[in-house]
Length: 252
Image (cartoon, rainbow, N blue to C red):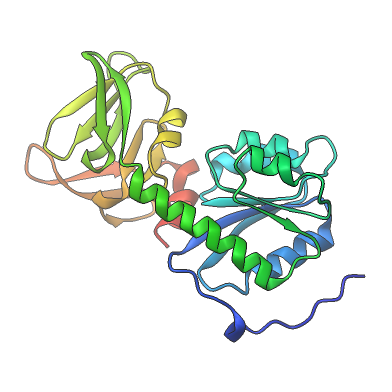
């Protein structure tokens, strides 16, 4: 049976930005111990724990999180299979085996922790994740898209919200801060959410993505924005039932 020593928060580091993670380990005691360690780090939130890789693959798109801590040797899927699926998220591996270290760094894992874990070792990994996320948010500020007029470079800070195009649902209309709009050709909302900075954008229903910066007020079913419509009234967005959990987690 795993023995757990008491850990006091006064001994723990505090990260500069709030981070959310999901955890995967098929061994329940190891998963509980990892969750307990994570909860000792101020500013770090465990969104959900999984002891089954298939459940994670089924549910992760519905969750709002910044990075993942994954076991490697598991039935059906191993940690590398999951990491390839979650390639847009920083990955930290946690395993009892040392022979996978080179493979882990070949897929650009942020860190590779050997079990049994300690709080100090976990802190080191979280600091690396924080540094990577901070660097990404500073350096990635635009992307190239195909539009109805050719290719364009679109800066994320220009975007207020995105809607399904009226003529063809495969296209998306991007409304910009200067009052203009751009039609993106043949791109899904899932792909857009992979490209847009997760901390700055959120999908609110089947037809719209909005920038967090435009949210002024919100209720259980509606979001009132800082934008004005043609009648000079606040622009209001519907909050879809299946998107409420992610939205409220983001703004909690």
